[in-house]
Amino acid sequence: MIALTPLFSLQYVLWLVPWAAIAWTDARTVRMGRIAFAISLLTGVLAFFYVGSFRPTHPQVLSVGSLVNVLLLVRDGLCLWVAAIWLRRDPSLRPATA
Image (cartoon, rainbow, N blue to C red):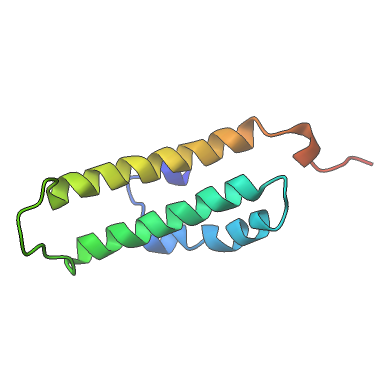
């Protein structure tokens, strides 16, 4: 759901961090944990650009606006990837039924 929302802020992504830490501890879900941490990191970098702390002092090959667009696409793609992994997860990840 977070991948498809128009409001995707750093505060929302911080909700992923504890779940990513838990996923990172299990060998079966470590990939989802790593992707969630990458999503958090990319959102932090994007927040840095949006606040305006980054002011290039020399012409660059890739403009800041283009870089932000690329980072947004990568972050949103990673969010969809986490959802896809979760939906097609291994049966061994499902809770055992009594």
